[in-house]
Image (spheres, rainbow, N blue to C red):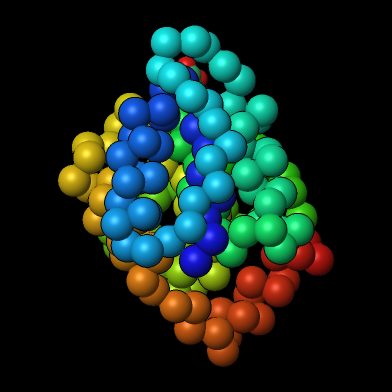
Length: 144
Ligand code: RB5
């Protein structure tokens, strides 16, 4: 897949690890920044264009990372067509795909260890949407 990737300064180190894991798994990565952990930046500046890349069809999915995951979640979910899920464990990651068809994964760098982050990423990437009654529910989100 072609994955859009973005973080603020708080998520930079985790973003770089995720980037390597995505490359290892054969994915293409489009990195929307930021490019260091020292300079404080504003998460919407990186998160919005990365999430927009998904609904515009330039990327298949996006992974967004900030300190708590909350800012990136709010930014992404204001974009029509984005279904962003802040996932703190593997089960949430799996079900955000199976039941919610989440096309954007958000992670909380300050609250998530590296091994757990890798598990979250892998389960989110490997799980398909179940459709059926869940498709009806997801459709209702757009007209809500
Ligand atoms: C940055 O300090 C922090 O506010 C940001 O990474 C994020 O947690 C916001 O929701």
